[in-house]
Length: 256
Ligand SMILES: Nc1nc2c(c(=O)[nH]1)N[C@H]1C(S)=C(S)[C@@H](COP(=O)(O)O)O[C@H]1N2
Ligand SMILES: [Mo]
Image (cartoon, rainbow, N blue to C red; front, side, top):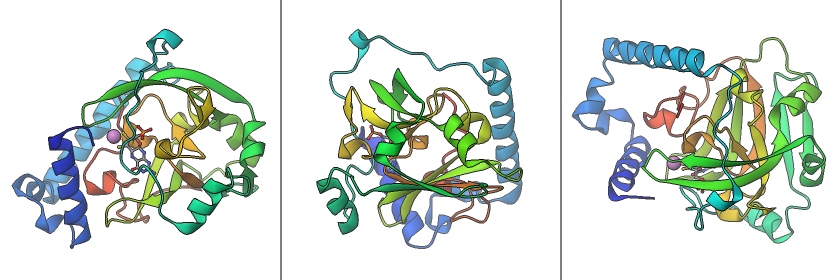
């Protein structure tokens, strides 16, 4: 956690959710429970997203940097390990028997080993990671491009979002998860990263596989991804807002 405010805010959100939800949050958050206020907020959020996408255009690339600009230290944030014994065992074994599951609204549900992922069309990019807590770091990421992978498993016509299910549990609120729409899924810089700064992705940064979705804030970049599920809606999933932090009040579309 980068700063005191971030820590406090997050600790508060996690505890609040754990002991019975938004009712325990403060005045501001109570206002956000009012249906008309929420509706207004979501409409405004939708408008920002639409404008941002128009201005940036769907294919525009996030800025890329040079090797010389790489951060000497790249902070690891949120979960930095996974206590689950199966994960620990897999890590000790270099993730040789680990597999990524791809299922939901796909024509051919698939599971892939790390070796198989490494053989897919890949991309390397040096980008800046921006965390909502107020810190940034530049890192080099290599991974399988999500677009071609989705083409090979075949999305069903009803599929509109991808949900990334993670292995780690953060706080008392349950497993981390995230979701993106198909525009971001097929964006050329959206990769399932297995390498960071030219070496296998370290455990604190989400080994063996993490999402890079470069035009959005840090919390969208799911670490420890174990399953990708194609869905038509995430309304019925968990808190219904499409992600771990989203369920605690962060925006679903976290454009930078
Ligand atoms: N599974 C999982 N993914 C996660 C998190 C997490 O706690 N668990 N934290 C998010 C946040 S808030 C940030 S800023 C980045 C941090 O990535 P890093 O550890 O490589 O810096 O991961 C994101 N993805
Ligand atoms: Mo973050």
